[in-house]
Image 1: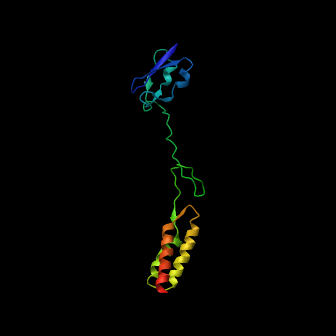
Image 2: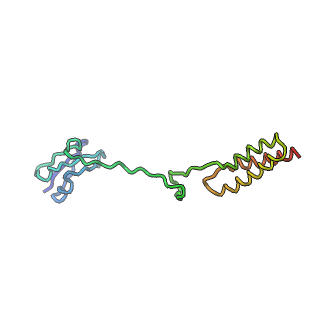
Length: 154
């Protein structure tokens, strides 16, 4: 003998065998048609007629569904798989910014800022081996402007 339950939202019928009745009694299930959740009455075991359905709000002790787990971004030292949504924060190299600023100053002040711009630019390019550091364009610009400043002042 089987029992029948219905989704309270779309009236989709489900046949339960005598072995399945105790398993589903009091459980919250999702309808395959409308994909909404409903609770199977715990009275289904005692009834031989089609079971009555109650919603979780009408149940004395509703079973709460856990929200889906939110992904947690990994640590800085972790590796990131291709296509990962979590991209490690990147920072601009301080040496690259200094190379550009000092290189521009070298256009107005003779010799020393031009040399410093080239040195800072080279140090910045060496720090680009770390994938978290950006600013390659700034470093190259600082080297070029520093070299131009040196040539103009010599």
